[in-house]
Length: 303
Image (cartoon, rainbow, N blue to C red; front, side):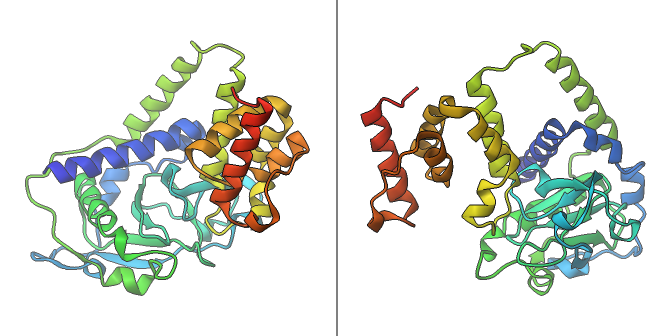
């Protein structure tokens, strides 16, 4: 049961982060989510460990890439690792919207409960699988299956993505009868949004430069596609906004490079006019990061 509690906390954390990042998503919550989840099409549930396909209908998302849609209010689920896999809000056709309780699984095997209406990517390497329960179940039982899928993420990577066929062959155990009860997901998420609004009223009206950089940096890392090229990453609105911060952003970028090498080099080049990376080191992200860090220390660009 300790393992179930760990998975439950992971789900709560993802849902909370998602609402905190996009409070308006609560406007798309599925009404009577738990009642609909309990309906199910079949009644006789498996009693022993079996295939995931025996519990869920597994299919692809029904949409193309998010850039093919106008902006809107429907969350678009791709294969990101944050915010429940939601990378944009779009205006799809009604036929592309899921409006019943289900689970999404990214190309890399990360499962999320989606308590709101959503649209899922169905094409390309970042395609998302959508799992529709075959049986009526509780919210706790749905989370039980999400946990079992996530415990088997090791099965999936860039060379062996979570295709529908592979997911169907994942083996899962039936939920135990003594799972803790979870209810009122709609009410809880709406209350969380209201508390967030109250919290922000207590914050300073003008965030510090460091806070602004951190917010933009998190957004950039969360929203970029896993398969994005360096050029595409640099075109992201949050990345451009960091560049517009000017030289004040340089020390913060260097700090980020010290924590984890990433594609900050275009921004650094634009902000400083420097290019300290030796030709033979180009394309080697760790070596490029080290060259910029050494340069920053020499030039005094440390916060």
